[in-house]
Image (cartoon, rainbow, N blue to C red; front, side):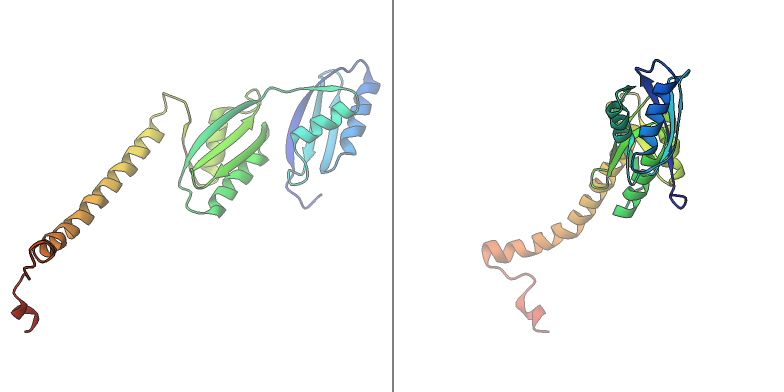
Length: 201
C-alpha cells in the first residue's frame, strides 16, 4: 500500500449513538480491501479515509459501513464535461485517472471519441471550478459543461472546427471541379478533349 497513490475521502455517517459505534465502523473500514487508513470521528459523524482507487471506491466503502449496521449520507450529482486537447487513448486515460483520484469524485469515465467525461461527484466537497483545475493541471482544457447555456467556449470551439471543415471542403472542390469539367465532354459526347494528338506527342 505504501507504494500506491492513495485517494483521500470523507464519508458522512448516520446511525451512530456512541463511541463504540464509531469503533465498529472504523474496524469495518480498516478491514475493507484497498483501505490504507480509516479514522472515524463520532462527534463529527464522519469517517476520514485513504484508499487505493484501483482496488476500491467510495461506493464500496459506503457498502462496508452499511454492512456494519450504519448508513452513509450521499449527495451525488452527475455532469458531462467537454474536454479539448485530447488526441489519443492515453490522453483520455490520463484525464480519467486524475479525476478519479480527486476527493469528492465518486466515479469518472472519459471517452476519447466524443471528447467528453461523465463525472459523478459530491458538490459539497468539490466544485465545478476545481474540476476545471484538475483537467487543466493534466494538460488539457475544460471546454464546457453539457447543458450549461452560459458556456461559450465549447460552442465557439465547435464552430471553429466546422469552419475548418468547410474550408477543407472548398479546397477539395477547387481541385476536383476542373477534373470533372475536363472529363464531361468525353463521357457525355464522346469528344476527346484536348485532341488525341496531344496524347500522342
